[in-house]
Length: 318
Ligand SMILES: [Mn+2]
Image 1 (cartoon, rainbow, N blue to C red):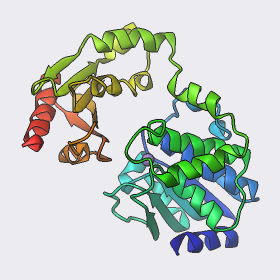
Image 2 (cartoon, rainbow, N blue to C red; image 1 turned 120 degrees about the vertical axis):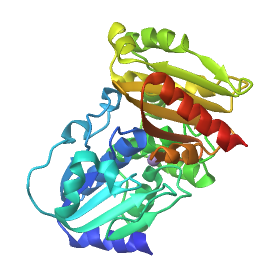
Image 3 (tube, helix red, strand yellow; image 1 turned 180 degrees about the vertical axis):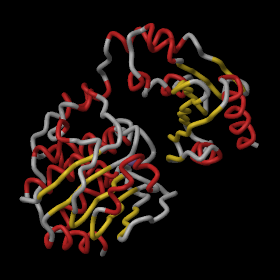
């Protein structure tokens, strides 16, 4: 079993790095910090990285302020890459892969290209946090309160609060075991799902007023420009969940959110309810993700980008 083999590597080595993907989400942050806390607690020398600045809403997680975004030249016995379907997801930290004896890739994306020395891809896992939980437990270790906070965050965010179809009975069993460590999960849920800044509420009113409906009201599009962010005093991360307002409309199957990153470059988030595999649409633009949640970067002016994405969705529908 690969998780036992990885457990032996943990037991037999001393220095580790843990890293996840650009534009980190709750799973990337929760799973890396969960593994980071666990390895630190059992006495390992661990560095934790992310190529991008972490959204501040996750700053309640133990280890949040230890996350580095730059490399210092050194050597690790082993590097863990979490929630990354390919090494490009590491952005400027891709160099880490050359700094260790062993690179271990742990993921749940079906598109994972198995880039590492050891690859463990479980597409049935709702979140990478579930796999880290299994890795710790299968190898006979305990899960601490701090590690549980991080793994719970990973799982509850990637399953949309246990609402999405990637939630399994295993997901709920794991969450139950994590809750048994005494973590304040109602408070974690409140921070993750029911907290907005004043800037975000202002931005929400601007973003929802951009609503456009297509394909018999089954596709909804929202967008945000850099100017809108600035007018509301908001930053890029403040808009990250707003795609859900497009998806949540009763007649809608696919929700689209287009965010201007810079002139001529847009980040597109896609969400679907029951029928459309949005990962396939994202992959047409060299993006990726999951069947119900995916994303990609599309170049051109706004109308061009909008029409390209819309056409791809409608083509896929046929
Ligand atoms: Mn994930």
